[in-house]
Image 1: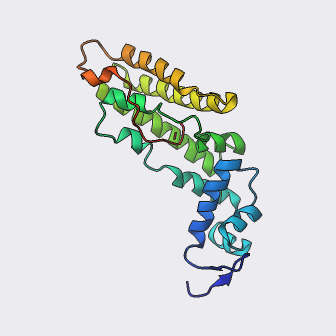
Image 2 (image 1 turned 90 degrees about the vertical axis):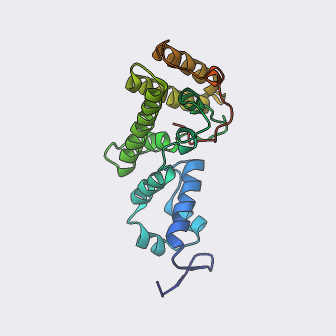
Image 3 (image 1 turned 90 degrees about the horizontal axis):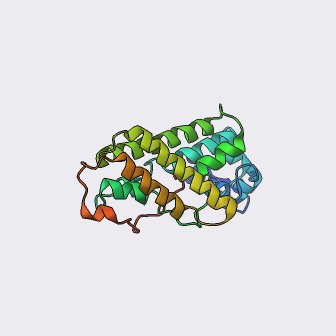
Length: 213
């Protein structure tokens, strides 16, 4: 791009304009919601003109979809890719979510959009299915008799804890983790080998977007 255009605050735009717009959406959509964030505010935060914004995105809907697509493509890698934890510990580490963590962006987007056909709604569905699948894979490693069922149960617990924490302004994840521990132990046959460290719940996992998380 050789031509540069003055932005609303006197800054020129170039190759970084698209990334600034996405960065602004990640901050504003997460902090105040999608519906409360207008394109004028996004452009001001990204320091681009609306003309520039619409050169990169056909509209707000496309920007919302890109916002979710970019959010966590690794699907909780900070939990599931850890090699210092046993499979059972990784399952429980998914519940180590600080109570100050904002509501899962995928849940927030699905609730706000009210449109199952919206591209962002599809990203939300795909992500939630991916989380359940990774939980099921880890449950399989841990020796669960029905890993798919356990994965769905744990995914439901995570999302429920995320919503309840937000609504009540009180940390629901410790209770969810205690329930998860019972579900995990009931799902793993007594004959399955377990390491001594499986008897403790890890507390050293990286923070994650709830539901994403």
